[in-house]
Image (cartoon, rainbow, N blue to C red; front, side, top):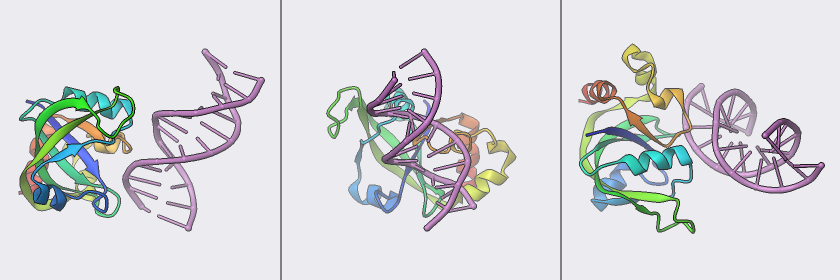
Length: 134
DNA sequence: GCCAACGTTGGC
DNA sequence: GCCAACGTTGGC
């Protein structure tokens, strides 16, 4: 079991959209590092859902429902997508500000590599974020 | 293979 | 709206 974090601009696709849809094909990733992370996802892995830009907060937990397959929106088979389903809401959104202020999260990829859109989380980072969100 | 130019992301 | 970080493209 691995833990991940994905980013989305809520204006483009929000956590509420995922809850409404019940399942989403997480496609459109065009960055090799993010792609490599998608390829390592296994069914049942938990994925924190982060709203970037306008909100800047972790808002819920999703779960991997299907391992990487060719991205239907890409011309090239080198790009992949996974399927995500909503697991549960965060009671309280965990803001980027909170994350920055928590010394336990100082090495989180979200801060270290601000432009990466699909990143792994250490189990302890996942646990800290979970406790902050509930 | 280097690097300047350019485009995109995302925080501020 | 600006800009830093960073990835990609294309000329040489």
